[in-house]
Image 1 (tube, rainbow, N blue to C red):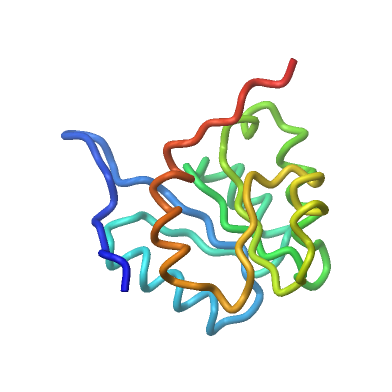
Image 2 (image 1 turned 180 degrees about the vertical axis):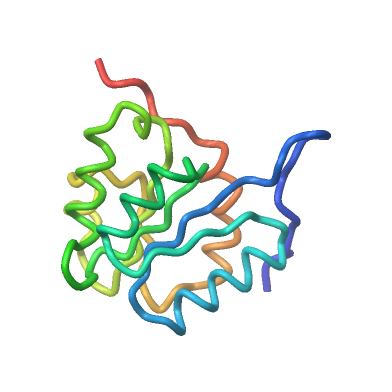
Length: 139
């Protein structure tokens, strides 16, 4: 089992904020519980439209985006956020059950892809890296 590490923070700075965009309540709740236990600030969205709204309101440090949600899906939400310069450097990680979806989610603007069911070991190993990664500004 991976070693659980508390959210990385500097003295006087708030914990990193993570937006979880996920329509399946059990998955959303499990991720939220894990991240909050580690000290992250967590917001949730139940579909792509809520994800865009929450992201614009809260300016998260990382977005975990389910790609297949009702209404506005994660592909559309990701493209919408990538069209906003304020989100050019915010890592967006796709959450998907679709085998072979990596190319499609990267083309949509995601920085990485996690297959469902989520491998907690992989997730925990990558979490800090996703938060420290910054996208190059668009040229």
